[in-house]
Image 1 (cartoon, helix red, strand yellow):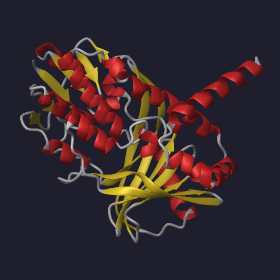
Image 2 (spheres, rainbow, N blue to C red):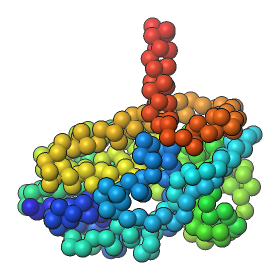
Image 3 (tube, rainbow, N blue to C red):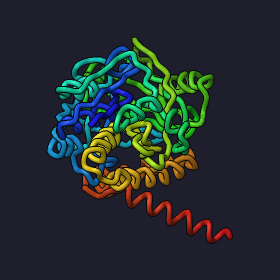
Amino acid sequence: MKVAIIGAGVAGLACAHELERFGVYPTIYERKGFIGDIENHVTATMHIITRPIKDWLEYVKSKFNIDIVPLNTLNTVTHHSPNKTTVVKGNLGYFLKRSRDEDSLLGQLQSQLRHSEIILNEHADYTELSKTYDYVVIANGNSDYTNELGCWQERVSGWVRGAVVLGSFDPTELVMWINKDYSNKGYAYLTPFNGKKASLSLFVPYTSKQDIGQYWEEFRRSENLKYTIIEEFEVLHHSGFVYPHKLDNIYFAGISGGAVTPFLGFGQVESVLQGVFAAQSIVQGKDYEKLLKNSIDKTIDLWEIRKSFNHATNKDYDVLLTLIGIPGVKQLIYNTTLDGIKYGGKILRLKRKLTSNIHK
């Protein structure tokens, strides 16, 4: 069986790893001249997002033998709205390094491959590959091909302005800011590399590259952030709904498969799972859409939360953080196994339907 994978990102490497477990050794085509992320940054995974999976790192290790060592555990989340700060502590998730380093997420995934061929500096053509390979997995980190083939429905698009900054940080703390004045319908966050270096990012949806710099300066001014900046970057962020996830012998996985969720979406957990499930569908003949059902359902629920977040005001943000700070509510949201995304999405969807019926 011949399998080509376009893209040596999270989904592509996870797919290759799973194929190798079945004795299939794919060829991976990567357009960059290296394996890793262009921008140095740190991402976070939070248990409240990955439920009902209790611990996703333990899950992928036990189920698929993918061994990922996090940069650090996430033990504190500090939320800031315009007039309120709420701190939550507990076993909340993980930090992952995204860079070209060997201990980065992509570096770790690559190190676990044994026989897959990786061809760098190759801008592969999926139409040609689909003629010479039994299967092609598109995991190239964007929606270009999915959109070209008519399978992409845009949900959220915007820009991320980020920087690597120096200062004094708690290596286990995620700091988040929500404020309409500088983030529109987005948010800002700080994720530490260590006690002296961190990644600072602002995501502003529904904006242009020309305007993101102005939002960035307003964010830093409003929050009085005077960290020393040693690197800066701007990245276009896309989130969309994909259907179908397979056309003939072509599979979509990762960002190409809609793995970046429309709210709080780094996409790395879903990218790992989509890569693995694409491999299982190829080798075992399983229905790819059925394998992805839980991921698709979560995306739909997060879309409902995103729509509610879009309509919130700064006053709503203050009220939200006040509620999160209530001990019983805090415990229910962060320190239980309750799938709050699932039930929250369904409640918001029901509320929208009821409101629509009332106005008819």
